[in-house]
Image (cartoon, rainbow, N blue to C red; front, top):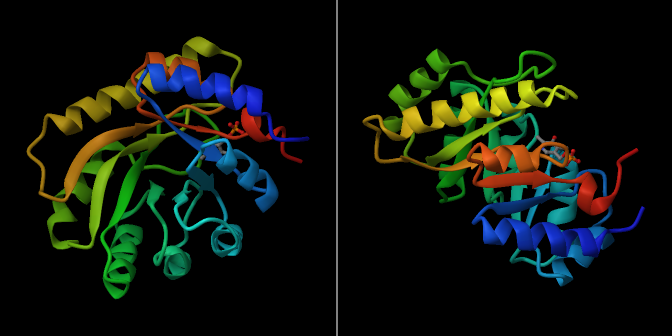
Amino acid sequence: MAVNIEAYDNINGELQSKNVQLVAVSKTKPVEDIKTLYDAGQRDFGENYVQEITEKQPALPADIHWHFIGHLQSNKVKYIAPFVYLIHGVDSLKLLQEINKQAAKNNRIIDCLLQIYIAQEESKFGLDENELQEIIANLSTLTNVRVTGLMGMASFSDDLSKVRNELHNLKTIFDKLKSQNLPANCQPSILSMGMSGDYQIAIEEGSTMVRIGSLLFGARK
Ligand SMILES: *Cc1c(COP(=O)(O)O)cnc(C)c1O
């Protein structure tokens, strides 16, 4: 299925009027499709797989912001550390320590979002509130990472009140974090929640960044 430029223009207009950032999720899609959306003005793209993102990055314009939104294994951080713009799915202190190490090797500070477990079902990854606090308590020693917000995924469910409730819970955790005493490298301003199926609800519940794939690029196989 082809890239849907009309959907892109509509969604983009809607998001800009609400001050919400769009990450176009291009996983499994060819570089030609990314280039089509790039030419329409999009600069932020999200990928889930290390091998895919490292193959696509050198084949596309250098001013693309590459977001890693998948589950990241510690032993693969080194491959994306030279260029990744924002890592959305940080779900352990061990992973954050490895990102810090690889960021230092590349003379960079890498921005990260901590992934919070909010779905009542299906979501396998993410921190609970205690684990979130443990990471915050250890953050000041990790001088090559900056935590710029939180990320979460609601249940894949037709029960929209359940989805809304989960997204609402994430916003509550986000607000609580922002009101806390935080180390200098924790500056939470991004709340990454909302996908093709629930982005409008997510925006109503306070999302500042949505990750949309299939509405823009067509269904994945
Ligand atoms: C695939 C994916 C998306 C985009 O999903 P769509 O339903 O195609 O919009 C968003 N976030 C994450 C973490 C994903 O893995």
